[in-house]
Length: 106
Length: 121
Image 1 (cartoon, each protein chain N blue to C red):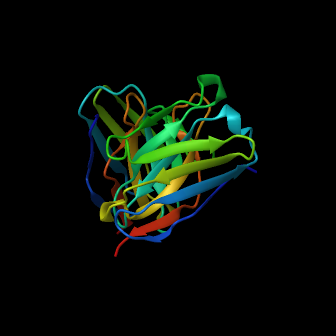
Image 2 (image 1 turned 90 degrees about the vertical axis):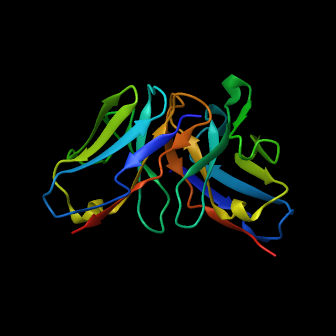
């Protein structure tokens, strides 16, 4: 089973600030996704295939990485970005998620 | 509009069984892999398993934590996904989501709102 370790677990950012979340895999991953989940709502696909933005996702979001190290970046934090973000690997079974990073507004 | 609507959650005693349903609409059900994902209160998402599409023989994959206790099936005539859960434990208490695999079977592109299961005496 591929273990995904996200850091930080919680991060607070001011409007306009750059935010970076990392996801470290215990084995090499070729396909990494990121989901956004707001309180009381179901998750939404946010970034797929490492760096592809899902439909409707603002261009201030980006994803990158390869092998065992991946990152999720918001270039300029906005209030609407407050949520928990999860990485998820699609390279081997069982499919696994990271523990999540809770993004708060400072 | 693509929709997934889960139902069947509730309170069940330890050792009991429950069957969840996911009614789907707005897409050709047999073309898609369908997954179940759960989330205990305040905790992370956990993939439970999926059932493949018609082209891949409707075969299944499960996580180790539920293999042998949970069974995923589908009624393709009614476009409904099922999760049969047996020998339930307190740690199975969670919100259960059904999710559709996007084209290429590489990410979950549509999620239901979830149904809550509580396992307690």
